Image (cartoon, rainbow, N blue to C red; front, side, top):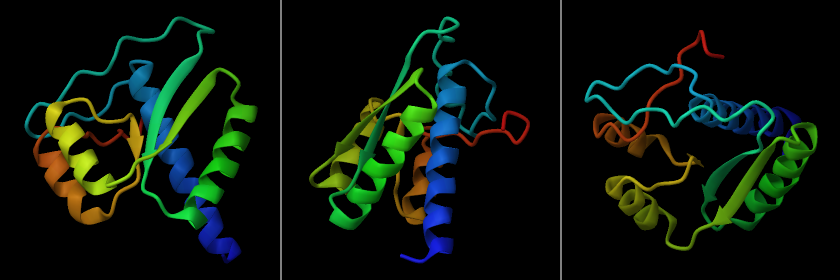
Length: 130
C-alpha cells in the first residue's frame, strides 16, 4: 500500500474515531434534516470511553485496522475501541442502523451514506467541533 493511501486511511480512521468521541462526550454536532438522535450524555472527566467499530471481512484492511487501532489506543489510553469484523456486513449494518442500534463507527461505501443521513441515522460533525 502506498504511503499516501495509508496516510489517508489513518486520517479517515482518526476522523471517524474523533467524531464518535465528540458525540459520546456531548460535543455539539450538526443535526440531520430529519431530526436525528441526540448525542449520548457526556462521560465523566477521566472516565474510559468505549466505542464500537464494525468492519467488513477483508483481511488486508483488518490487518491495518488492528495495527492503527492499537496505536490509537496506546496514544489515547482513556479510549477503548471494540473492533468487530462483521460477517454479511452490509446487511447487518443496514439492519442495525434501521433498528437504531448500529455501531458507533463503521466504514462503508459512499452510496449508503446519503440513505443513512436521510433516515437521521448519522450526523455530520461540525467543523467547529474538530
